[in-house]
Image (cartoon, rainbow, N blue to C red; front, side, top):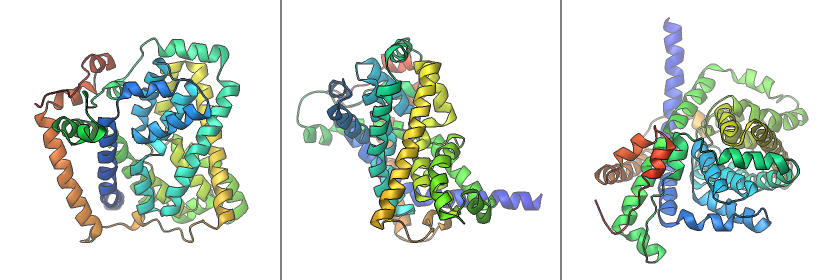
Length: 395
């Protein structure tokens, strides 16, 4: 019993250390995301996403990257865009970008694993989007696409779609900066900030617990054997293939799986394998089931298969490109695995950003935000019917 409690304690300490290490980047990322969502009106988005041309995909990618979402909310929002007239390819590009090309993910990757991983993420994301768009043209059209649109229009929804459907942006006139610095702008930012945190907190905690357990319980020698580290060529071929499959059964979102990605990297998975693993938050088992509800079984299988192929291709391209340019990290020493509490710059940044969080949470509560949190656990139709606009008043 003592050994079991000690092992559990080791895993929890590791998870806690990882969480402390990534706290301030998460706060900063969600704050910036809230700023963008507060001043960019959603009704202006869909008119740029009507086709699957390079221009539409570029708009979808940029807008997705600017509207950070957890994996579940991103999937729900993509469906909403599809129902409002966006092409399926553009909606999926938006979904990919809003989970994998966002500022908080890039900051955490750079801080915990190195700038090479951030660069690889932001280069690999567009590669994946292009591959997905090309494969959709071949395998996601005709009756399959028509059936997917019919299924999407039937109104099947969940709590995350309720979150995605809430429009809390600042209404009324004025320039972007005027809306941003207004009292209503501050209120809108606080609402987006708290709601985004509420939508991903479970996944982040789950990801930290899984990563902590891996780091504490799984011997590095076992991981090195599993990822074929003794054979560099085989490891490079194996990594991008197995990375998404490991992610699919880990059940965590793109931000939540970064700590586990660090553990896998230290354990021997290839560079391209890490990138494909991080991209695979969109084919975890719960989300595949959501695809089935939203678009039907046949479409869900094609979406999952196409996404998997695109992740593998992106992983291989990044592996080859970074190898050719000499950008591969020299060591496998993701700092998150050895993180611990001490009075360093991380601690001071965390304390500062916790103060920012407290200010935003107080504003959220004082402006009627708590009922919106309760709506996230209820039917999406209730959320949609209670859309909250900050226009011309302050609570």
